[in-house]
Length: 474
Image (cartoon, rainbow, N blue to C red; front, side, top):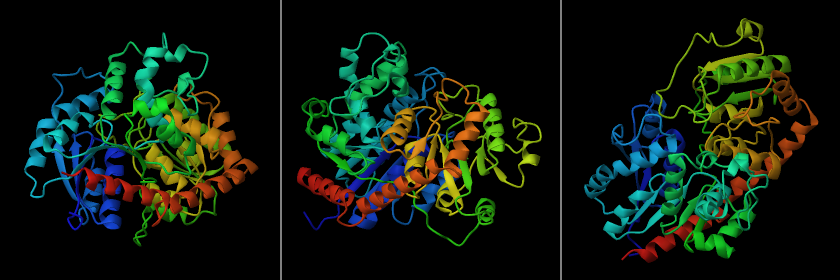
């Protein structure tokens, strides 16, 4: 059996933020561990922009990637249902297509790995008699809160956001009530009930792979493995650290407009501003952010999208918007800042930007993919969380790891004023605070690199995962 090549099928729900880590982990399993990996990418029209198609193509030489059209759920959930609910229902309704696709494979799969929205597909693994594993694309701290939520639900009366004291997770850093994940913000919403079912469902996997590393979250990882309450919550299943799983800079000799512009700027002089592939902010906030960048008198690259009427749920199921008019920016802003700033519509080569020596700071929505890209390129952050678990990520970056600053009030609660924007930017680009954070983030970068090297903690953890998979194959 040991000479046989392990075939891992990896299942990704719609969206770049879910598919990218699965493609990257699959690529690592193939190139570093000689596994056979097939990625099943459930896609929708809105979540399959040209950049995502290009992304899939870029992995084609190492991975088999099969796109599966998501089931139509328009008759199952209302159009205004929250993103998490839509994703869970969509993945459930697509199970017949997933099952058919797996059945048609030439090579019998040995293991199924799915993200947190694919948990109902565990039934397919059970039908095939193969182990199934959860891949958490976020932090161990998020994993602890997520899996502990059904117990919290029984302990806490009333709305979490109304509580004065932080929510306790056994063995872990407590979570402030206003920084919980989005589905926990309103316990009366149907989205919360879906979230609780999801939290129970994911723990039925045979183990968890988490996109973190031992030195980054030692306390939480220890709690997930040794705290009796948390261990019972995850059904005493193993926890594997596989991170950082994130896109890496690979020089290709090509230089686009942004990289060419960066090449003309001094070292560590530019702030890069982007809210990710799905983040949008209000027109009022765009206006204040623009004025803040101008007031700071610092160089900037800003990836701008047309404003949204709300900021809580991003623009996940809305087709990508491309805009060149930028009439929502302050009058004269582009003219006044043309010598120090570059405004880019909708998308920019983020990894290339963060790797550039002229970039000093990243103003980010704190999605975990973007956060890891910033850390592994040694760039301090201004944390600007919008939705999902981003508020938890921001808290960890600012309070525990101390590689970021954030506004005094959550951007989801109040528009961040121009003076505060300017102050944060100047402090991190020019001030002592930025210098101290640069030292700290460089240490994290080194730890991340060590973790994925051969015989590093994440490398060893993946080897243990593979060994455990073989032991379960009948």
